[in-house]
Image (cartoon, rainbow, N blue to C red; front, top):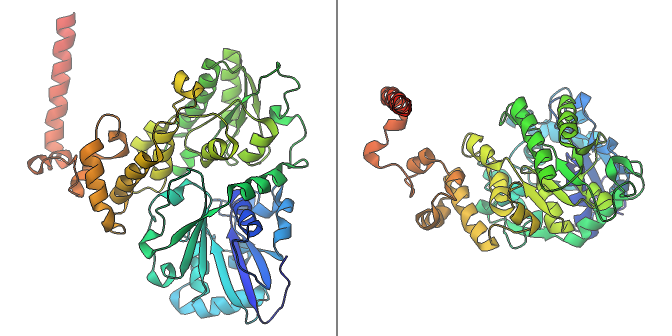
Length: 468
């Protein structure tokens, strides 16, 4: 524990918006990944669309297990009220005033400040880095996005202050691309330290009563554990409609039943509507599956320890990789091909997590691959794929990846890999797989599209007549 020396010394400020992120920071501290400090502040930010109706990080079950690593816990929401943390940043002329304000608010005095933040390219992390001009910055990644490109161009006055990228080894052997445009070196948070922190969260009740959600197998046949379905709220991101996402969850339960699982635990996204659970319960009853819906907000990793699921099913949640890499649990994915088609624009930052899960993990419908826990690609093959996808997403930020992208596309573009790319994007970047230049006008020409639709309609009519 750091000791407090107000008015002089070094203060480290750790910004976190999720319990998973706070656990990552706790593991990094336990592993001595941060230097000594006179004071350590955990700055909590609730980035939900409506923070007033969502449980804040420091009020979540299990947070008290992490609290002891920090001298103080402060709220970013309170500091910038009435503004929303995700939509506010200081005006250039007001930066000095804001630094004076937060120094007074948090009793920082004249301390030297060091920052540890997530998602440096967006607020609130970017706003905090702008307020403390000149403070060194460490970025920590708590998900799969660290393996993809930086989603926006970052002001060099901020980017050049980033010293390193702390990340979990979710895909062993795969190196993050995030922030490499500034020469930022990645540094792994030790897996054993992170798992130890998660074990702390699982101790005691952690918001769960013993036996909740099938957390013990006392009522199950010997040798059986439930399958765990991870819900995501993709309709909130306008990737799927609410009806499509509801159907996706139903497909997960059906897939678990098809693999012989008779007991399924559904962990909904914290902000998902309750009606989804009711639809799942109805479907589970129809196919003879015992369904338990977990209403308590708790990390999936806590469930991994408490119930040791026989199978973890999801779409593209980071928790699928923690299940596989950290807990050696069998996993399966579904719905990723639809998401790869729907994600827009092409540079949507979710594209890399979806690509990793789709390319690496077995499809729920492939019984053999799921049973044998077969990984689809080697780390080397995945690295080449992500370099090509990363360049196609952000060619201006990573121009040095063009040769890698051209080489990969020339050798590997085919039926099994087309879903990771878009013809129009490849054409715009003059990459292999692009439309011939003389035909490039067709996708944008409304008249040609109308003629093509009429031609297809006539062809279908002719076929129906012939068959009749």
